[in-house]
Image (cartoon, rainbow, N blue to C red; front, side, top):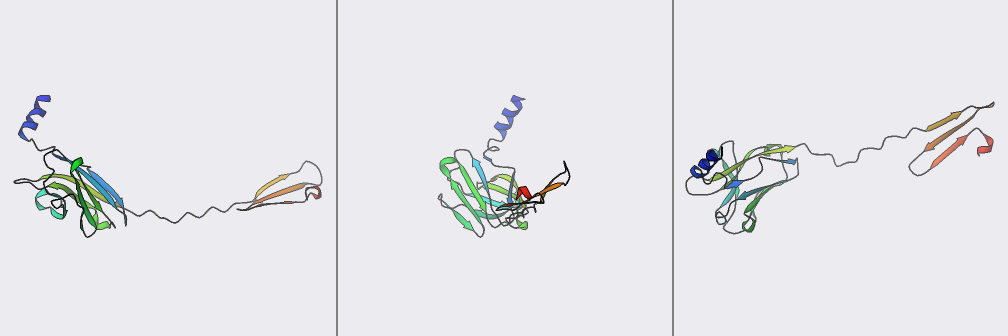
Length: 170
């Protein structure tokens, strides 16, 4: 098995040159970030984020410039952090239409280095608080002797009230 992996590494030396998450998820209307990592030697190459089911038909959404500056294109930005050998893509104000297959890419003569990422936009989570359940009065009714006594404990958010038929409880 090790010999097989060594042969793959020899025949395809750049196949692990670019890595990232296989999947990224973000809420509708929110944002998500994808961090792609590359091996040393690619620091000065152009990095990009493209969309398409296949590498060859991928449409570039945003790409880096010659520096580490953040580059923005509509709702998507990219930043190459060369000292960490990573670039980060951020998609903001996500829509359902943003779901799909994207690629982290490094522009290179011949065949670009690319890594696919499945982006999923999840339904938005409600920010409004859930209404508190109404509290039922707790009734403690005991009858040990005649006449019977009863106690009703009514709980509200700020106080509690006790009602009793027993004159000594008042």
